Amino acid sequence: MLEELKEEEIVNKIGGRFKLSTLIQKRLVQLNQGSRALVSVDTHDKMSIVLQEIVQDKIFLNMENEVETVEDLDAIVAASEAPELDPSDL
Image (cartoon, rainbow, N blue to C red; front, side):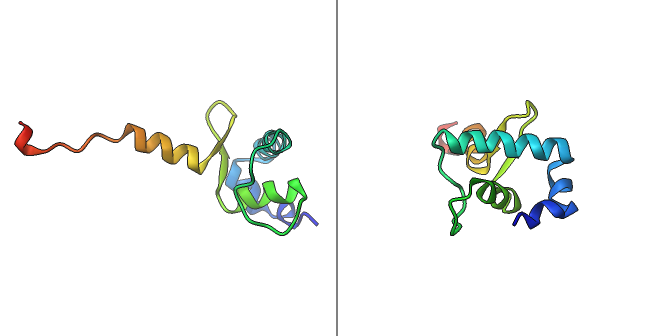
């Protein structure tokens, strides 16, 4: 059923079993509160959805041990990029 959890690769990807269990638990809470899934899978099993999100690098824990999505990270990077400067404005 949850073959992904038997692999050490997923544990190493997240940084250990404690972080993996924290990420799974927090993401399950988000899904139960109505967050949308970030992957397309033919199941309504939320645990399988979370594991696929991890395997596909869609979610991770930030430095505060909060769930971040790749979409959130992309938005932060885009907002922090320097604006384009036109040399004629100088």
